[in-house]
Amino acid sequence: MAPAKAQLQFMAIWIGFLLLVCLLLALDLGVFNRVPHAISTKEALGWTSFWIALSLLFSFAIYYLYEYELVANSSGLSSRDAVMKYLTGYLVEKSLSLDNIFVIAMIFTYFNVPQKYQHRVLFWGILGALIFRGIMIFLGVILITKFSWLTYVFGVFLLYSAYKMWSSNDSVHPNQNPIIKYVSRLFPVTKEFHGESFFVRRKHILAATPLFIALLVVETTDIMFAFDSIPAIFAITTDPFIVFTSNIFAILGLRSLYFVLASVLDKFKYLQHALVFILAYVGVKMLLVHHVHIPEWLSLSVIIVSLTAGVLVSMYKQPKQPQDDTPKTPEEAVAEASEER
Image (cartoon, rainbow, N blue to C red; front, side, top):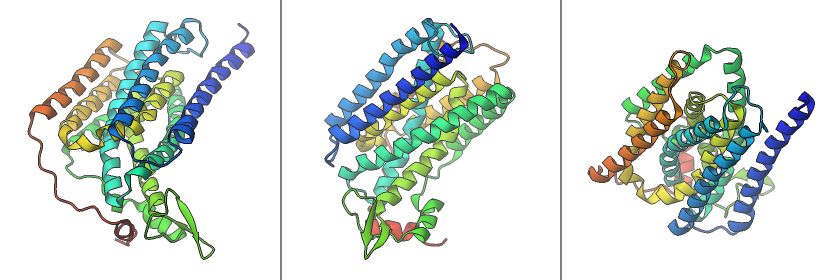
C-alpha cells in the first residue's frame, strides 16, 4: 500500500474511533440521562455491564485491525499479541481507576452533592479526563520513542508511587485543593446549588455554583492520578492506538462503576493493597523491559490474581468502622475550601 494511502487509512481509523466515543457520550448524557435523576444500583449495573462488554468486544476489532494492518504497527505486533496487550492495558487502567472512585466518593460527600447531580459532574469530569489523558499518552509515546531511557524513569516513578500509596495513611482532602482558592478569586461562588447548573447570573454577575467547584476538584484529582496510571500502561506497550483505546474504555466505564461501588466502598478496604502490588509490578516490568521479556499472559494473570485477592480478603476481613463525619452543607464546604490556609 502506498505510504500516503496508508496514512489516510490510519487517520480514518483514529477519527472513526473518536467519533464512536463522541457518539456514546452523546447518547449517555443527551438521551439516556437527559433528565437529572438519582442513578439506581440496577441502572448502574446495567451501564457497567454495557461498558465492560463493549470494551471486551473491541478486542475483536483490535485483532482485525492488526491482522490486516489497518493501523500503524511500528512495534510489529501480531494480531494475537495486540489483543493481549490491549486486554492487559485495559485491566491495568481499570484497576488503577478504582482508586479514583474512593476519592470521588469523598469529594461528593464533602460538598454534599445531591445524587441526582453526581452523574453530570462525573460526565464532564471524565470528558475532561479523556482529553487530558489523550494529550499525556501522545506526549509519552513520543518521548519514550525518542528517549528509551525514560522507561527507567517511569519505572522508578511507579515504584515510588506504589510506596507512597502503601505507606501513606492520609486521604485526599478536597479543601486542600489549590484550584478552589484561585477560582474563588476569579468568580463569586453561590452558597447553594442551582439545579445542575455550573454557573448562574446574579445581578448581572456570573457566579460559580458548588457543583462547578466539585467538578474542578474531581478533574484536578483525576489529573494527579493520571500521572500514575499513564506511565503504568507504557510498561505493557508503547503502541499509541492500543494505549489510547484501552485507556479510553477504562475511563468510559468509570462513571457507572462509581454508582455501583459507591455504597459498598467500605467493604473493599484491601483493594488498595492490590493496587499497590499492581503498581509495583508494572514498575518492575518497566525497569526490566529492555532486558527481560515478560509475557503478557503472565502480566494479565498477575493483575487478575491481585484484584481477586484484594476482593476476597476484603470480604473475609472485618472492615474498620468509618468515622462518623456528618457531611457539610454546600455553603460550609465551599467556604472552608476557599479559606486562606
